[in-house]
Length: 205
Image: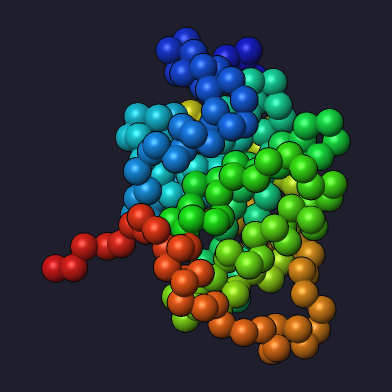
């Protein structure tokens, strides 16, 4: 890869201006959430200024790389719910995360978690479906997006479904022991409302 990773000088200045993981998260938070079934590259997200969790995580990974971090992502698998993807980073040996989400609690994490399991568990209580069921079940190993550099994942005009396809092939670690999921209670109404603040929804025709 060239030093600019395929970005124009203007695009690279924008990514570098975010400076650190918290700055990247603030940029994602200010960006509208969109519900389209797309798989845009980070360049396309910068152009459109909107994203969902998959695209937001990839933009965050590219921005992390532009600011000296490895471009790492982590995949969550859910039961009776959509999966989720994060960009992850380490500070002094502790893990944190950056994420775009349609739910309040499934976004940023400060770098205070000693292991990826600890990080994943921090999402458990706030990861729920519209039935108010806590749905997070598995987390993947870290994936370094540099493995897709030959496909120009940061700047291509083509959709990045090959990333999603790859995540289906790698092993995931269960968060719960057998039988635990059957004993889980549904989310209370107050927590549900808090988790859905400013949630984007498809317009009704």
